[in-house]
Image (tube, rainbow, N blue to C red; front, side, top):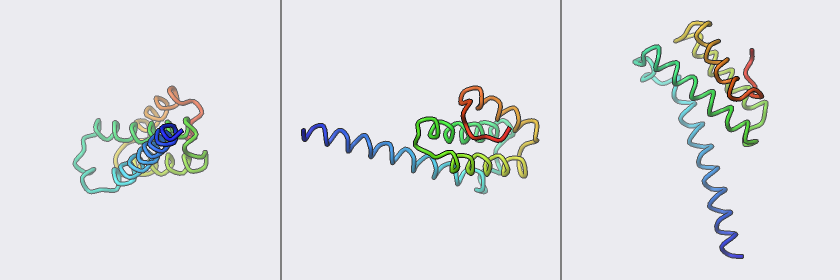
Length: 107
């Protein structure tokens, strides 16, 4: 019984740490000054990664629909305002939606 509790505790802790690290990285990635040095293709990968990570967490029921929608919209708005064209963002969104069709990304 003690082993089961220890395993459960470790599994939950790993999931919590994963969520915290993902959001910490994602929330500092676009606003940071180091993102200004990224090339267009690197910025596309960053946006795709942030959207994909958010959609994955939503898909695994670790993130509510409303919070996932809020984050994805924030990432998309920041990318369109500062780094990428609307057509580039649209391509990235469609790629992410192919993998996660239930992801709360505005179409």
